[in-house]
Image (cartoon, rainbow, N blue to C red):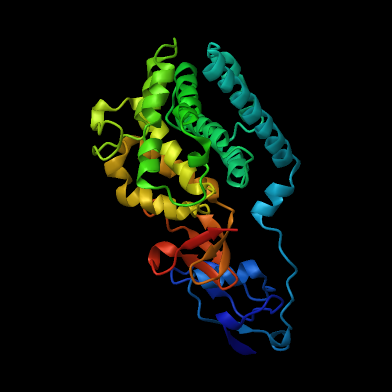
Length: 358
């Protein structure tokens, strides 16, 4: 019989004692053949060492084959391939229709546009499933219109999280889809510029909310949709643009679109930068979001969005890889991660963070 440090245990060893937690809860029974899960459980309960049956301590560590990650399973799935194909078709249809609206003054057909968005939702009505699809859509042929479709989908789910009825839900979805319509008035070379914008170019880009409002104000669209085109860059503390509105001066629908817009913009790849890690985005929202965004909306959004990342494989700031298994309700940006070394509660060690979803 040998006592082995928990860090030196390998699958296949057999315990020679009952192992209890500090609260006298049986963790592993005597005679149990260890697996990765059992070893992780010992680490989680801070068990320093275990008595191992003679002979079993000589078990050779297994060479682990490559384990398919959650993201890899999504990318290989039939559902993802169908979603990606449908997404690309929807973007193409919406772009063509909106070009006709702008160039030929065709009336905006809300039913047509909502049906295009609904076609992406109908088979992915579970919000976590739909976000699984969106999280893995890394490359877009038309990033401007793809962003608008993403924001529409996020707004649709967000409205459901908020308990909105169908009519309100459709308004918020349309507001998300049309929020950036003013960018069609900005030269494409500026919108897709790979480098940093000049001051003059950035000033021009910041005119897109006003341009969008001009395009929509003569339509019969719901006023919340029109206001969202104008106000989605306004912030609750008055730090936004174009009119530096504050608090209740900002349309409630625009406050929802603002959160969805920023979340998608930061977590998506751009021509001038890579995607930010969602947990860095959540950290940003937690540190400044309650001042800049409607607190009742941002609280609901963060509480739900973070749960869409459970089961995802991640790389930590120290290079270790693991899987998110639990979300800390009071510290959303620091989940519990299982690595080869065991369980790590990032809320207890802020020197570590989630660096990347892999």
